[in-house]
Image (cartoon, rainbow, N blue to C red):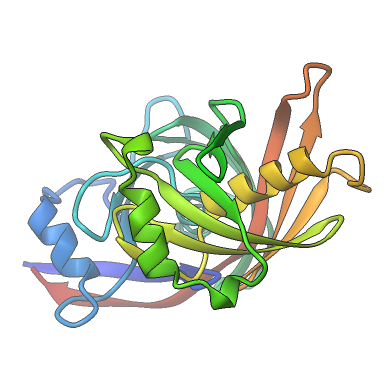
Length: 266
């Protein structure tokens, strides 16, 4: 069977996207793994299906490159919003359904191929200390460890150890290495669970790192915004802090780019 697909990337975090509103194909673990394979398939960190929804503009179904359906992906969420605009499913504003609930988003800039998308994130758990760092769930679980230089860390090796630590059993966690650069600036490198490797950026990881950095430097933060640099590109994370010291109205803003579209036999 010939399958039409689209390839998107958000700051180097790349995805195969499928318009699945008709739903002709059953996306088994084997098919997803094949499409994401960088040698034999299209190649991507994950695959997303844009599907019909009775309660929102569309539904986002996300799979990691290992073929397993996964929790929320922030970069994927921004890319699928840009994809929905490209297909004409939405204009510039949307509400869509995902693994962790409903998300609002807006396409701030678009020329059809290059987009800037601002996505509201769902943070379902409070920040807590864990091992030698911090832990938070931003739609996907993340363990944060602060380092002097993200480029000096063997992200794949060290990230794999922490991802499988007994503290995060039985499902494991994503791992982010973070360097604080200024009151409102950080650098982040991420090991992604499910990809089982370093990715050039991770939307939920960027959000997690920004919130924990703000938590540790709350008296020094000049505005409710953290600028984040990853190996794949730059982001901004916006937030409010309520009277209980918890973060709300959390938005992830960054690029979402259509790379190409094509057909592949499955």
